[in-house]
Image 1: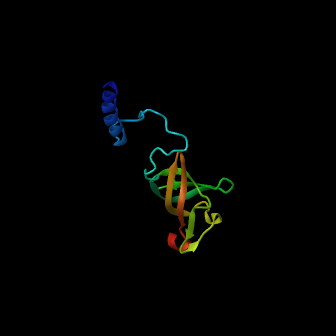
Image 2: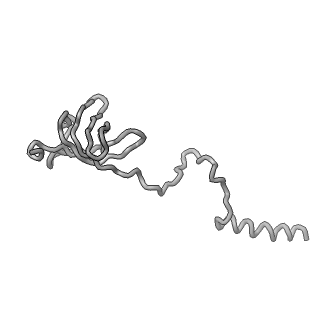
Image 3: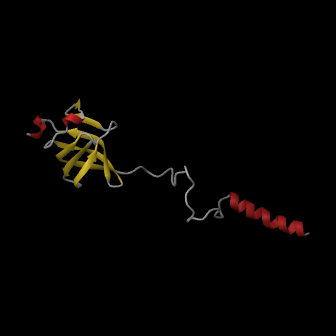
Length: 126
């Protein structure tokens, strides 16, 4: 009889756990290594930037921008950044002090990483 009573309590408990009705881990528990906290979470939001380049550091792939939207900040440019000037592809060498640029970037910590950069051609600036 004692075995029967234990089975009648254990079966509903297992069913509740299988249906997710019982918490199996504490919310305060640290995440498992290599497992994303929320794999369906959206990526960081892209920010729009627009402004004039105030300095260029080619060695660090950085430009400092006086941004109309985000204030003065540094912008990291890498190989994944899509650079254009007018309708043509551009290079880092097209990023010069005084040039007007606009595009999208994502903030990671204190760093802004450029996704797209459009350099205004001299015809567009007029």
